[in-house]
Image 1 (tube, rainbow, N blue to C red):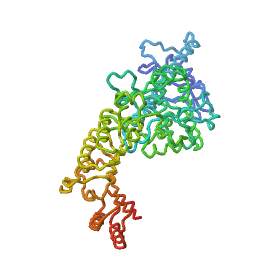
Image 2: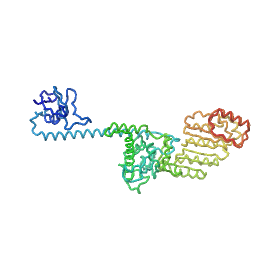
Image 3: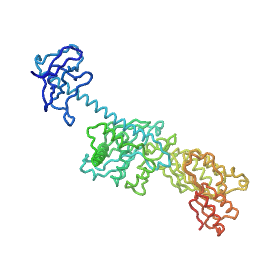
Length: 562
C-alpha cells in the first residue's frame, strides 16, 4: 500500500491524496506533485499554520522543493488566484502537466522578482531618508562669526581622471573643494544668476594626510558627496543633481557657470564615494563583521557610521588646515567670501553671489577710503584694519561703510588724534548701523575737555558702555589710557550677547592717587586683561600692593612693569 498525504482545496470538502517521497529517511511531499493536482497553488496550511518548504542545515530550501509529511491530517491548499471556478484535477487527469508546470514556474519567478524589486526599493528609500535627514541637519546648522573662520561645506575629488580602481586607492591624491552657500539669502531683486549650492571656482587644496583625513571627516564627506551627486532641496538650499547639469569642457567651465559641470567632476564624485565605501569595507573586514545580504544590518551600519554627523564644530574647522597643503598667504578660503544673513547667520559664498547684493561703485569708494588711510580691507573675511588721523577721515569711513552694504564684520580701528567724547558718539552711531560684531578699538589719545571732567562717571563713559551693549557685538577689545580708569568699575547692563569683553590699559605716567585707584580696581575681577605700566617707578611698596591685589584678581593675564 502506498503512503499518501491528504489535501483539499481550502473551503472545499473533496480530498485528494498525493503519494509521499523520501529524503534521507524522512517522508516528504514534492511541491511539483502538489502543483500537478492543484495548479496555481500558493501555499499549504495545517489548520491556521502555513506549512513551510523544507530547508537544509544552512537554511536554504531543498531542491526540488518539498514539504514535510503531516500524518493523519488533511492539509488545506490556498491558490494564487481568486477565481472560484478553478478546476482541481486528480493526479492522473492533467492533460498537459509539463506545460502548466512551466507556466506556473515562470509566474512564480516573476512574483519573486516583483518582491525583490519592492524590497530593494524599500531599502533604497530607507537609505536615502537617513542620508537626507543627516544632510538637512548639516545645512540647517547655524554658525556665529567667531566659530566660523573658514567655509564649512566641502567635498574631496581625486586629482586623477582615471576610473575607480581599488588596487590603486592608497596611491590616490585628493584635493579639497569648498562649496558656495548661496541661496535665498543671496538673491537680490533683478539677479539673473542661479542661487543654488555649487563648487567654488578654485583649484582645491591637496590633502596631505588622506588616511587620517578620511578617518576624521569621512562621514561628513559622504553626505556632502551624495548631496552634490543626487541633488537636494532642503531648508532654502537647492542643489541640482549632477545629471541635470550641462556637461562642458574644462576650458569652458568657470565660476559663473553654476548650471554646468565637467565630466571630471562627475567622475570624481563617483570615485570619492567609491573610495569611502571601500575604506569602510576594509575596516569591517578587519573587524570580522560580515553583513553582506543583510539589508537591515547594512542600514544599521550606515546609521552607526553617520552617528553624530550634524555639521562640523568650530574646532574641527580650525583643524582642517592641518590636513591640507596651503600657502601661508592663502587663508584657506577657496575664493569664497564671508557674509551674514538677515538673521545674523554666517555663510560663505563665491564672488558672483557676494556681489549680487551691492553696487560696485560704493564698494570701490570704501576700498579707496581704507587705502588712503593706509589701512587694509579684506573683502573675503569682511575685515578692516585702519588708523584714523582726524574726525574728517573717520566720518568718511563711516559713510563709506554705510553705503557699500558689503559685510564688514571685523573692525580694528585706532583713533590717532586728540579725539573727544563727541567723536566717540559719532562712532557709536555708525557702529549701530553696521554689521560689525568683532571690534578692536584703540582709544589711547582720548582728550577729556574741562566740561567732560565735570560729568559723572556713568555719563562720561556712557558711550563706551552703550557700544558694549550693542546686541550685534560678539567680541570687543579696547585699548585705553588712564583717563578711562573708572570705566573698569562700570558694568554694561545687557552684555549676555558678548562672548568676550577685554580691556588693555597703557599708562606711561601714573601719579600716586591714580596708582592707588588702579590697585583698588584690581582687587575685583573686571574686563582688564593687560596692564602696561612701563616707564613708571612704582617701587617696592607699589609692587607689594600690586602683588596683594593680584592674589584676588584672576582676570588679568599680562602685567608689564619694565
